[in-house]
Image 1 (cartoon, one colour):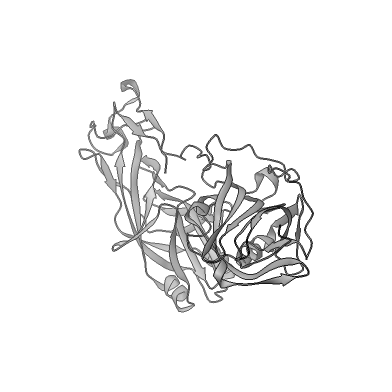
Image 2 (cartoon, rainbow, N blue to C red):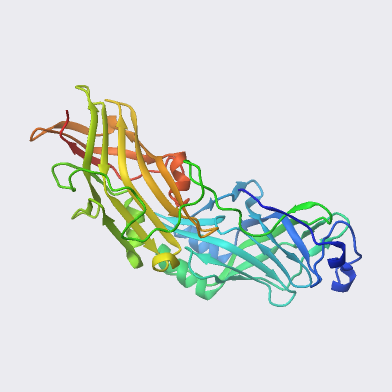
Length: 406
């Protein structure tokens, strides 16, 4: 994750840590006028345990990581990206890092965690599937223990107790009817503090990252324009078409309270997949090797509408480069909204999926060649373009392809 640098506060802005009740002033801590010390980096270790977690486990809910969060022997470590150490402390985690709870095809993301420690009403706020931040966990009263000489701080291990409201949301999204408020995990955090006179890592979100094609993030395009080039060719029909749904569970998830809009030559099929019209067939040989481009765009939106929506993703103009057997590639022009910066980033001609040409069938239908049941999987290059919703190697929808060949 890219981090921005800034200078620490000048000497005039430094005050004794004693004034904040944190101990003697030291070069290890850069204090602000409010008596707080900037948190530079660190991690929070989450060890699932307790009544609420056992209910999830009994319902076959699996826990995995998102973004830069990692599984280790000691537990799941979520990077701390900023915050403050003071009498009332706060530890912040990036909006792209967090936990994923999975049950079958259902998937819930818990991100944007903020640990608020004030010795009385300590709590953890965060987002469930990118929605408005709210209190997800409560904690017993605790404070951040600061080592001013070592320039570090840590919390004692405490239980995160799932709130009733968060339990209802998770239970509904995962289909776990008996989930109640209660202990979800045992948690501790360790962080490093800013150092005066050095170029410290600033807390907060990283700078926007361009797509694989380079350049700055694309401006947010209107839905009806989509920001994708409109290719020449025929509109989608059932006889000359790429029929592909991206991923059924993703479509179901977005359509539950969001919207999916095909345009520019693409259309929705009766089965809910997407039909892309043929733009061009560059090459084909008798063994089945194919190079073909398709036209059309599909826009996905959830957690709001228009530019205010947290989830925004465009899938545009698929292109297939495939051998007669083995693994081919599916390229797309893609745009997606980053959860950490809120920027819409363009990923032109990204290799989104691997295509197993040997997994399907091929035959002649009415003067055209038709492939059916061809399996596709998400590539490592496609993970970021897909806004980090899935990991490399996960199955996407199978595709059906019908083209008139030269």
